Image (cartoon, rainbow, N blue to C red; front, side, top):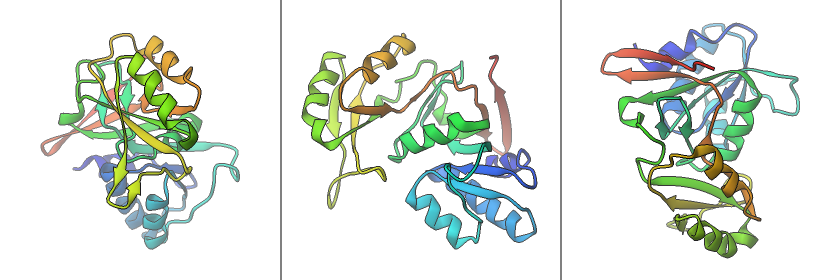
Length: 220
């Protein structure tokens, strides 16, 4: 069994489902599409234009955050998961919409491989931060003061912009032992919209370990 197939077991007929962004989330969306074709009735809320296009290709009915009172379940990937199930996300550039949807969901399911499990957040050395374009230079100066090495993300076509029209700064970091304080320091920087830190969100984490799926539950 794959983590995408296991995640489908949490989805019920009639659910509003948050659809994450990235490789693991795309695998789930494809599996969900097959279930929809088989008769499952759900509505999806995509967290990026890429995921929206995939869901439309698979004929998954879509809605928006504004059009629903609640989200039953959100399914997404992660770039790091610590022992307390805090996360770093955002390598795919959709961190703000992903956090909005995850925070609004009654249940948050995270899909990862064993390589994403870390002892302390920051071990993989990268933290995405979304900032308004006007503030990129000043945000970089503030981030350096927090011992980050900020590098504005670029593509082959120029500066990378999120679906919100904002810039992404990839911060080279070491491990982050004081998560709450570090997150507060980041969010206090004028121009920072949000960071890829997902702290205290109590996800259920499905870990692909060979052919097996491990389920990690928050103690909160």
